[in-house]
Image 1 (cartoon, helix red, strand yellow):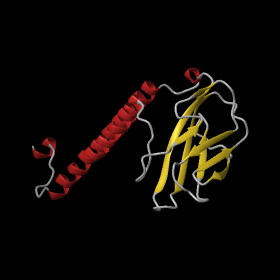
Image 2: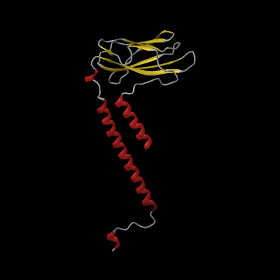
Image 3: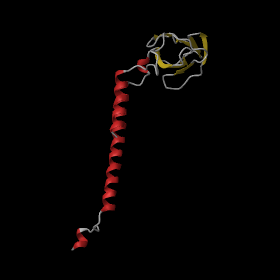
Image 4: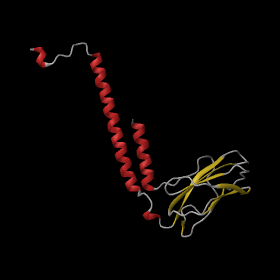
Length: 175
């Protein structure tokens, strides 16, 4: 139970303080991206380019998530030994977009993966406020923790009843 609580608190803290997504393996990250991570765009785009900074052969995968979390239809093309571009219909919904990328270095076989994000238009009115998310997460974790604690207490009570050698006699029956 303690591990779950620790993990939950870690997720909440990361959400509140906006810890950016990083690479998932041995390399330090990508060389660059277009749009750059954290960019705020005023005009719609129809492609994202990632420069992995290492020879990737033809292994790149790039996915684009809309502000509501749905994955958009994309086509990824390796455009140079270190670069891949993902093309899609021009984005329309304002908000924060997430670009997930994954490739394998031809040189050493390490996985180059992670995520960047950019904002299209005014995201302040369309995004889910982090503090509201954290408050809801705390409530959900608290309710879940209470139910877990309650179930554990009931389990211990059932064990006590089963191991009790004396018959259960109510005060009314004793007299």
